Length: 84
Length: 237
Image 1 (spheres, each protein chain N blue to C red):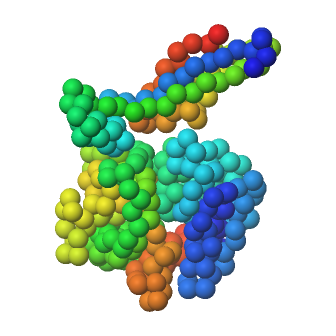
Image 2 (image 1 turned 45 degrees about the horizontal axis):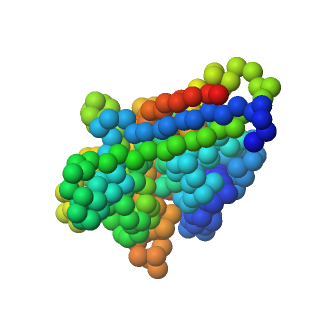
């Protein structure tokens, strides 16, 4: 990563209420391992985007790619943690 | 009339769909390459099963942006018949042509087996060769076929009769045991409000000859042909 390039950090997670079979299975595994304090687990995705130093309108473009591709807005929501 | 079968990188049921149309149904069919922007004048588009673009990110998420899909979306918006099977269903939900989403099977395992489907509406372009409430034996083969939508949206789908196929037992009952993946309301296939776009997780192209274990899937292809012919008659007037 060259020095002037920017970075965006994005989290994608399922909306509340959407079944997360992976999360449920992980929670069960934890319970089986003896970790009974973890009542539920929700899984999600994490993205790091490297952005060309000279790029314009970055905030809008990051928002756009999240809505179009990185997340499925029907069942997921995204958070752009930071663009720096 | 002519069918078109889209081939994405990672499609693996495109030849099955092609063979079902060409050799069993006996109609013309063309492959439509994902990088192409030409539907070659087909009357029906089939989005086949497989793992388009490796199913990276989410099943169907990347295929939805391929050049051919922009044409398929235009085709569907202008009333063209589009049928998405398995991965094709996932592509259609990602493209927004069908409501809802296909998420991981509730049990997290890939499931490949024959299931029974009840025809919820024999009046659609995809089921007109079936009887009302007919039970079809057609196989599934998927890891992400768990149809999900929110309560209100499911109610809307049901109220507007957009559920085309439901997973049932041999007696036609939509029991929890007959649901192979956790889909809401045992939903196996839906259509859009206009009635020209279908998505279904089961594979009708894998059930078109006795040697495959069932010929029930052929009815979906016969329905499409019949709907196309009816449309052509109307168009010729």
